[in-house]
Length: 329
Image 1 (cartoon, rainbow, N blue to C red):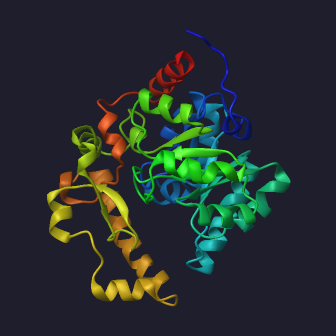
Image 2 (tube, one colour):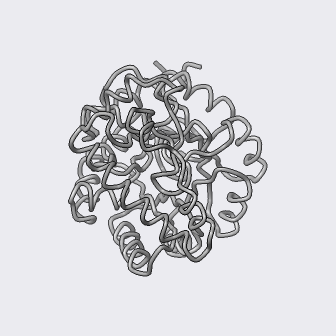
């Protein structure tokens, strides 16, 4: 097997060996999973909401556990939506702690990432921003981000509306690294998107079905059983479409916001409150599903990559096998 290093912009920016990101997931980004992805040569992304509120670990303590186990670069996810001053102040403090603990790669989601760029750049930090189309990419680039996470229509969670090839063709001319997020479930998918010209990949669903992820086995088994056609979009998690595994529970509660909810979501003054209501409700359900294995009674977020996921296995084995396949292609 060739051990030649990967030389992509993502590898250079994140200072990693293999262009694979273990994306941030609530409540599945436990410290053991994040650390395993980084130790294997990719990069695990810490999700502070998950670490602090789902895993009940002090943020600095969690980072130190991850760093001690991995011994390699770790990233941080920063949600930029300014829903409240308390939230923003807390997120800023978490960013400062991450910088103090050596984190230099950041993935921003939602809102304007300008303050993140301004905060981390003096320390040598790099920011990639989640986008679903060109107009959001342009705004993010104006804010100073160095790369883009292209979230396509096959992604889990907040999926985009465009296919991986179409989205790359739209974003590549912007002249910054573009990472593919969505629909990557096995090594053949990884090889394909890298050959398209992506700088790397970001995975979520694939890493839930690992031995290190502390998600309940019911969640993992749901991923193994699901096919791409079983992934549906629901507005009832955050007010915008989120990809989940279809189930009797999903069918019973429906996937569309009510008429009143839609009006509140469209109003600039009330949309944040409506999204907060949906988010608090769904976070509780997701945490219950993750911790208690309530089968198909709750929202199990997942992307169309379920089609390529056949077994639960160690994170390191996944990353090593995929790297071997890409080197051999």
